[in-house]
Image (cartoon, rainbow over all chains, first blue to last red; front, side, top):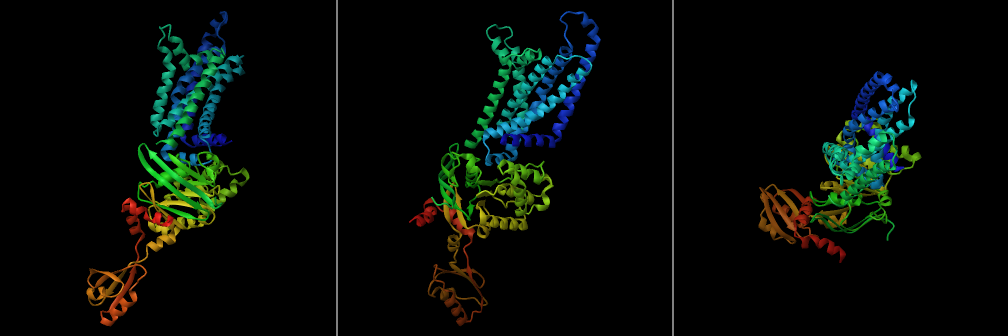
Length: 251
Length: 321
């Protein structure tokens, strides 16, 4: 209940600043651009594809590239949205409003997290509408589409939890944004390392967010991938709670 | 334990690294009391308030709010507290109504009572007309009021105000003070300040804290007693003779402080004003002024905070004896 109150306030606060509207508009425009290019390409190659066996369908040809471009853009955007979550409240002293209210640290962290997540899901919803609009003219592979949306949703959840944690570490929102971006990008490209080494490459591949996302985009639903994201999210949420608790003990 | 005790603090310690900011603090707050927390900058006032409100964990010691330990059951204890930090925790993007609504939600005011709670808090803090205004457009005085409204919206048993009148103009200060007196009738109020007259005009009990220690803890009447005059200011038309006055009974010391002005010191309870006046008139010096000089709160404050530790602790030991 309290989590919902804080989350709702967080979401409303986001929309009170022009930043949220601006981000929504820019993202929507860029994704629309990518979407239209993909539709154009597909129409160009559709005649030649129809002859091939096992040819990629509309969903593969359009939805997957759109979602994978979206993930890279969101890697940039989520740190900007998450930077203020705790850092701003600590800087302006408003965190003490939450801390002296009968609310636990867990509720504060979850409230903040779900507030941001709700915003990101609104963004995801708008993005999904574009490939979904193709259903008017053609048949879509809803399973694959769902798997892609799920993948992007989990990815956003992971981005947001890491951003939230970094935001608890500093009082400077910009520092939080840069650090979160660094962390996320690092986890994104970590699989580049050890690509030649037989012994270590599985570890790097497991840690990489990109690899787990890629398999969901292909439409293969693995519990490993889903678990990876859930573990990722829980880890960073617990770290955030611990971090906030620590501020009460030591300054 | 007495039912009226709202806050009970026992052996409270707080360290920042190796630096001890609050040491061995003990006090109680009863219902209907306004407790003034006085101290120079960096004395540990804010730290103590943060611990009382659950924003900071004590290094050692116990805080009981309404008999509930704030570390064991933080949610229950915090429900009895309204806290206004030094900097009011306001969201500038919200209107006063939206903000207070959120505060009511956070403090678990039941859904059907939120509107009444909000209106009552606004009325008490003089914010009736301000409901639709953005907090970022409010003046400092009004922001402070919103901060106080936030602290009392769930009508908590204890209201903790950290320097509530800092940076306000004299009229606003007077309004906030009368609001605090009003609050003191129903709630227990703890107020921190370094403005001494504020304590005199508002508080029913005074605590002076210095370097993290309690150096004075008494009702306001006790403080007033300490302020009792021990000197008289004498102004005459003609120059009086100090030696004559010094010879009068009960006069300890005579100090020449200006042309035709004398300060006459005496021991407490032996006021020589009457004999002094008679003497001055008899000699025909032309009495213009005879005023008892009160020891100001400032002086007591300076005495207590600059005195070495043993003598500073004396009043507490006296009381304990």
